[in-house]
Amino acid sequence: MRVAMYWHNGRSLGHTAESAKIAAALLDASPDVRFAGLTGAYRGLGMLPDAVDVVKLPSFANFDDPQGWRFRSRLGFAEDEFFAVRGELAQVFLRHYRPDVLLVNHLPSGAESELAPALQERAYTSAVLTLRGVLFDRAKTNREYFVGEVADHIARTYERITVHAPPEVFRLEEHYDVPQELLGRLRYTGYLADPSPLTRAEARERRGWHPDERVMVASMGGGQGAGHIWAAVVQSLRANRRAFDRALVVTGPYLEDAALRQVQAESAHLDGTTVVTYDDDLPTAMKGADLFVGAAGSNMISEVLSVAANAVLVPRQLRESEQSIHVGLLGRRGLVRTAGLQQVLDGALDDLVGEALAHPLAPDVPHLLGGARRYPQVLDEVVR
Image 1: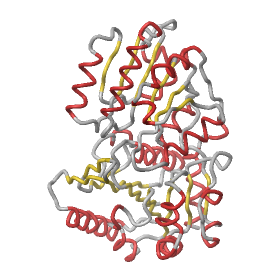
Image 2 (image 1 turned 45 degrees about the vertical axis):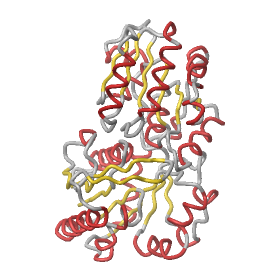
Image 3 (image 1 turned 60 degrees about the vertical axis):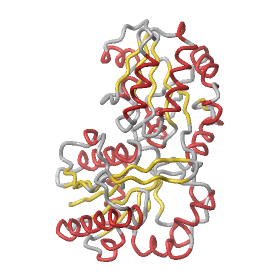
Image 4 (image 1 turned 120 degrees about the horizontal axis):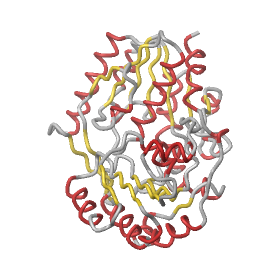
């Protein structure tokens, strides 16, 4: 079976991490699967299984500012020309590869409708739209997914719509106006990550940490535009310095150079603190830590629950509410702690980190996990 998966880019690692989990599950399930990734992501591609062949689209940065999104092509293209180039590349590749299944992550027509020509040409047998669960606020989600021509497009194009959330936590049809025609195509996978097979002691041994060390780990995913949040995180480490022996700060490979230098400088006088841009075994570190502080993205939430981490999660979006909504649902279930972005910037992490260290959470929810392993069944449904 030939599979192609498109994910647009991202200023973080979440879309790539999701695609990697899905690819791994499909490849594990069948030796006959051939998996191609079609993406503009340029960091974190090492998460993908070796058997995945990546067709690289030109990359862009999209900065989340209160005034609006700021687009920047890495190659200097004007925005319209940039997405036209990407769309042509995608169309030509799919025309020749002719996958049995095309998986499209998050954006039904691709970024700025760049996939529209390829989808109209339909050089594939079946298509599946993959959604993270919570999308945006109700009005924006209905406008961009579930009303008018965009809803008709989804109905014409996609045989299935997978939702990377457990229905016990979030159901699209209870929050958005999902058309009746699409309801029967929804498949709730649960969070994609598998429950960790490691004990805390095993995770610490793998990381080379002493069993009695008090360890904090922090990560803002890909990290793009997160310099202001990192300043608050490092301040919280400083305020709680006597409560831990070791801290691992994983800034993210997309964090801007100037912001990275600032994090390194502010952490230099915190004994036992290590700053890295990327850690290829972060879930093991999260499993072994006494506390994890991280971004509240969908993939990060999945990994927090997979390792039963004692976590404080920060919704880092300025112009979207998805992370605030999602982490709020989990916070009300007592699975994570959280504070709003402005609260974090105003210093709320100082006390919240202390509280989390004194009264740790240990979410034990294996029934909400393992979503990637359900993908072979979904593909079987559409290629029969």
